[in-house]
Amino acid sequence: MNETISNALFNSVNGQISPAMNLERMAFISGILFGLMQFGALLYFIILVFPQMGPPDAAAQHVAYYTEHGMTLKLGNYLMTLPMPFFLLFLGGLSDVLGRSEGGGTLATAAVASGIIVAFLWPLSAVLNHIGIDIAQAGGDTASVVALDAIGVYMLALSTLPRAILLAAASVGLLYSRSVPGLMCWMGLALAVISLVGSATLVARQLFPMLALGTILFEVWVLLLSIVLLQNSINQ
Image 1 (tube, rainbow, N blue to C red):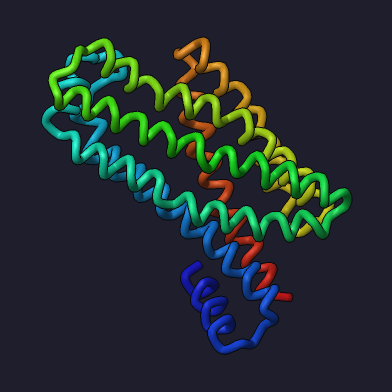
Image 2: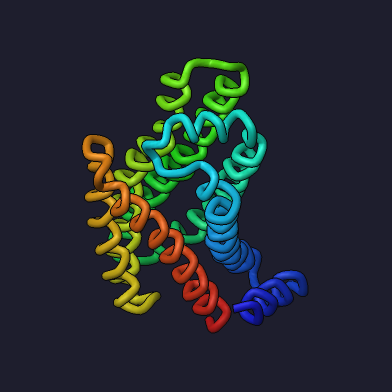
């Protein structure tokens, strides 16, 4: 993968490809960076945040963590939002690929529009979570802090609805264009179903594991798809 990215960057810098193809390749490299940065942020949470915060229903422990280690959590939230510009650039490259498929205009529009919504819903929850941290550190009541703490889960669940549209539109378009292996397209359609199931976390928090699984697999899918599309672009 490193060799693929290096070759793409080398050719881009030396002007060995057209400007349009150059931008498309940069979009796929952005998708790879998005996936890697998201996994880095997740690793940060697993190591530094989740063990100290305790289970989701440990309200007192959450408030204590917000009060004592709020900056650690704020940094983690920032690391979760930082990859989003790269995701938006990836959407531009995906739009070009879908535009060349059968019915591409409609599918590309649906994928990009829903992807933009996904890109902003989840980071917005991080900003609102910062308000909960500020309230905890100011000595605010536990109920307010716990309510703001739950916003992240609800916003993530809400984002799965446009995510399902993105996955379905992209998978159908890629299936028609045959620009990626069919297995990846069917995986995207399966993830769209998983996303819809995860959205029910809005009314049944017991489905959170499905929500978390769908989110992680979506990041894996974007990473793998970006690698395949970049490799296809280089081989053209």
